[in-house]
Length: 281
Image (tube, rainbow, N blue to C red; front, side, top):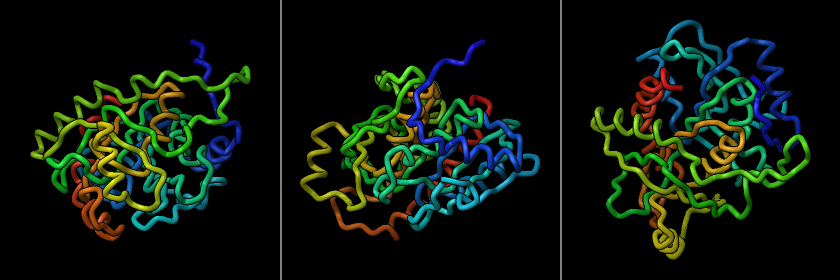
């Protein structure tokens, strides 16, 4: 069966990264999992529940073209192993647009996962809560998003015939995976709901006026990531699950240290989801 034609930014970075990975392992992950700020411990949870074999860990700095993250709480390592008898690639930290990188690098986790063979992306992130009913520590399954980053993740991407990457984004987030994750979290007793993720360019947090604007636009949570990776995954024909962890109320005083401290409590919930859904990837 012929592989469908997909667009690309044409910078060749994922190809160089995959070649470096292939020098160490021939694993072909079925899913890529991105662990946001302070969420790296989710690997240990997923491994304890359903891991097997001998995993491999590669620092981003050893992958040509993959910049090491500069954000505290992002370990900057690629973990490759087996969860629930399914090979998975877990990225301990992501590359953000606000770090000064071009937008194509903000989706490098998705691009590398796809090039390795994955057809599903699980995108976790720490977020600020916009809905007043959301308590810190609750989870939000992303059903849709608002891209307010000032540019599109697919700007400059081309199909093999050199046409622009006009991609349908009416259904970016997979309904089946979202429903399954919702069930796992509720069974575990985690406070969880579904909602809309507003993506801001960052790195400054939102002002009270911006927070009110986002609420009126229909957003449930706000963050500075996820959307570039999700849109790129959609363009590449991948299924997407978005998992957001509420660390604080948006518009109020907050520090990154507080975000990291709150995020650590979400690692178990995200690890459970990865372990529980592995057979569905």
